[in-house]
Image 1 (tube, rainbow, N blue to C red):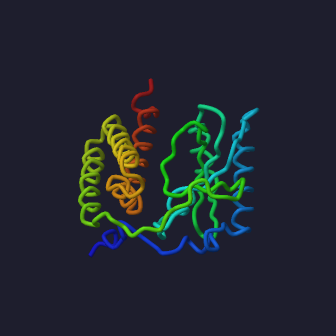
Image 2 (spheres, rainbow, N blue to C red):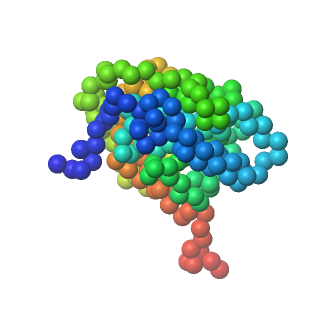
Image 3 (tube, rainbow, N blue to C red):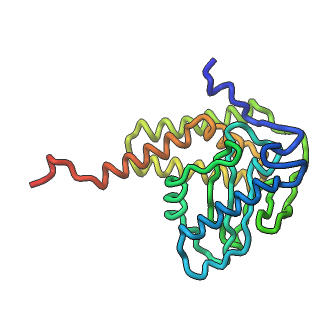
Length: 227
């Protein structure tokens, strides 16, 4: 069996990740380090009057569905409509940050933007904004794998095409379908779990890197084109 097939499509635990949590309380050393990372990120952004409202942790590391492939989604909540995506990408590519071996991914989230997550914890205020409920999984693993195969087909087709726009469209479609699933059924939606399964398998990153490769080629000028 392919190692990728051994990845649990819907991981579930009866306790929050003990590397980060003591019961439902964030470990003090973890919280302090996350705040230090957030401060460094703010300095990296170098945006006057950023108007930081909160620093939150969400995603699987704030719930019962974490796995060895989970990362720590650390969000800077700001009173702005700007997400500073280029700076965020540059920061995440520049720094290899981990807490207890778990990668940290930084985001900037406008305060008015809806964020779907079973658990959202305010690292700044050291309290839950939305405490996750422990419930047994209700989604069939076969449905997740079936949806993942469908998504994988879109990815492979886009990559085989060698067309930049088709690859970008495929990535946008995957994100849109995941967003629709989150809005309709939350983190336990088939669409979200299929997306996360492909991400754990490396398929999403493969498409992203191929897009970057095509963009680089499009922006480059070969010697045969020079006069």
